[in-house]
Image (cartoon, rainbow, N blue to C red; front, side):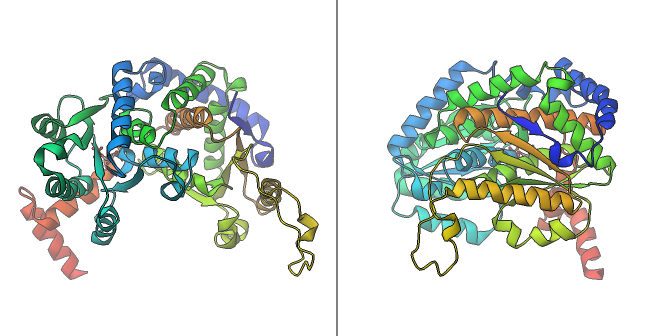
Length: 447
Ligand code: PA5
């Protein structure tokens, strides 16, 4: 078992009888997932994906990644939400949060279309000047405003730089299999296309072409990533509660939520995990935050954030619990140098591995936060290899589905995401929403 849930830092907040009582609910939730009979069951394609994926497309992804590596300095991945977070999370978690600075022989990879900021897009355009560019536009619907704007901008850049025909060879579209604006447009233009399966929502799509193409371009072994996810599926999809940490994690979250712990903070001591936490936040936030319910997902990187949010976590509102992702084996080794003058008083740790010090910081913080009334769950993962990353992804996906069903919500829809879009379209005067636009403008003027 690669991921291990350690509950000893939460034991004073979760009684063993509570776990016994909630176990049947967790078992029932997992049974819904397995039998594909709960709410949102049309979106359970991710459950068997690690063992049942389109092998031909997988080969095409690898081939396209090699072509992209050969023909560009920069890959611009255009997408928002589930259409970019997974790729960015995996690239930074496995390689580095400074991937573009430390990469070795692979293209720089930038993400666009995840905001409407003119400055962010202009910066990226400047960064691409004088470089060979490829674009991977990712949108299941093909109509999402943010990526559609960025795609227009980059299409223009590519056509001006390379001409129509060459630009077509540099654009790769990941979108709906058959329907949708982007699919239709891509086929007409002759772009190579990859599929976002109908039965997989954005936040569960990292192991489809959505994540895999950019991940493969970064030089990451996508076979090993899928193998790790397949191993986690084997481990967690069938095991009983007593032997199933995905179910137990979901159960602990729900017990803590019932005790008023309404915010979960995902903690890592590796800066490379910052985007992984963003992916996790979308997965849990969009899956559970509905019907007036849900745990608010938040994240920190320690020890960095111990010097900012540490005060609040130790001492502020007591509605928090933490889930610490403990990466057991570090990627690198670095020791504290000896200084004969010892002006900073650090010689007592001279010669020690930074990882050992980081580990002690983690243990000290765990104890302090438990003393401060913050339950801590600890998830131990062996390392940041492709295999273990795939394993961790599947663990979180399955635990999220189980937890959502235990909470009594549909973990696979996101009705709330539409509200801002309706207002934005109306305020921009989109055809068909002019009346609503006038109403909103009036409301704003009266505020
Ligand atoms: O998880 C989700 O469904 C969302 O975050 C979508 O991925 C996001 O809104 C982008 O949608 P699309 O891929 O249709 O452009």
